Image (tube, rainbow, N blue to C red):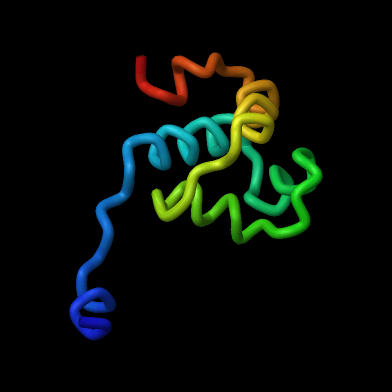
Length: 77
């Protein structure tokens, strides 16, 4: 079972794609974003953009402010 899970790639979420596009539009690196949201690990940004995890609501609102977008923009509404 573990071998099967390792061979299947998770599709990138649309949310993660929009999150990455918003970051790149602002010309920010993942490290810069993690510093702005007081998050000690830039790997979290990578996981959110890859669709592996999602940020909590507090961080999501901070990301919207940093990127200059509305929550609806990132959520695709």
